[in-house]
Length: 329
Image (tube, rainbow, N blue to C red):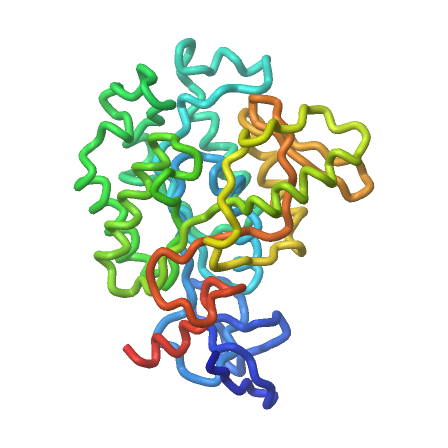
């Protein structure tokens, strides 16, 4: 890996962001990009910007909450694009059950407030709804009647949706875009559609240098569950083999440590109270469950597969090595 010399004479990987928060630039950060530090031995053509595309409110926290908090803490400009309002979600609190789609059909609006609180907890700079708030509706699971709703995301014109996302990316100009793999993580139609438009839109915007897929590590989940089995008081059942969506670790390219941002991630998960329940025992153990009541570990590292762009420097940093890429453009 090529390495750069920083202002203190120490070597570090060439990244668009500092490798430690104490690396301070001699000049102030660019206007409108937060208050993070951008120390670097070369002049950047643009400040570091990260865009994440998610299907429903809560996906940003479940899949990438630690990564968002990590990069936000470094001053990276973080944009989250949410494709639907999550109108078809199953509701956990009985007191809110009448919000469901087949009753008052007000869950989507309620989840907007949850999403706002979660984004604040993670320090998201910029949040957008694809096509504007309410343009696309949660399609529900495979073969659900909601698939046929006139505004269902999965039934919408994919060319229109791709252009809507491409326009956001043109405005934001992120070097890094995060989305889902071709299976959408676990097969949800909206996640698969989000993958399709993210792949196409990112290819249309030259400022995008890398595209990643967010995934769950088989080994890390197994280790987390093993630890949970030794903890008293977990209020949900442990998953059966194959019940949680994971990938083999040999396809994972990038591991982002978010240990220092556990509190922010748990706060963001708690914000999505209609969809997620969080448990802690006061002794360091924590887990969460969706409406299915299956315990899932809170893991301190988040995992990604590089789908497009240069691999050098990306092992532990979504932006690693991109300094050199920008210089060569």
